[in-house]
Length: 261
Image (tube, rainbow, N blue to C red; front, side):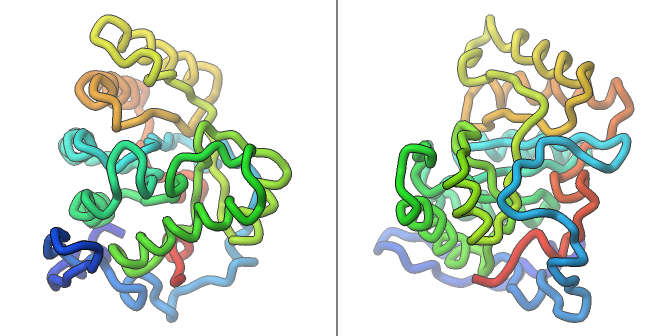
């Protein structure tokens, strides 16, 4: 996927948001990333919509997955992953820790370096507390931003705090989203300090020991970016696991990770 995406990042365009919006590099077009000649049907993919998936199905893989970005620490995490050749998945918000338009260059870089981008929500609502139409508005607003910045939208999502109920899952199924959970927890928001990061690392190791394979962390947290990610990478290497995107760890064709809006 990296070679396919990286080759498409040569053109510049202006994303219109405000008078201060900078000129941004254009991410791959729907025509380049969603090649109709290789596109599989949704039925062929055999990955459900509106059902929480929290474990990899490809043996020997682990999916490092991050929520709440993009933010000021995201690029440091990308640097660490680039140094090791590992891939990860980033579930992005529209306007939470940072505004996605202000970090559109980070979104483009994330995609171009072979990582997977998923939806989180526009404003990090607990979706279980709002009506159906508000769930749709949250996801549509983020889809509009992805279309402005990338030219297409993800088919994967992870809900804020991973809170779901029947209504949320029904709405996400209607929107044709694959819903991702986690089987490895780090509690890194609560442990976001120099003296507590090791507790998150221990939780990561415990999750691996218990058979977990899709993790939850937040690259928006300073000490996650500066310390925890390195500890996670070290543990993955120590165990001889292959860190890949969520889509790869599920054996899901990369042509189906995104769609035109």
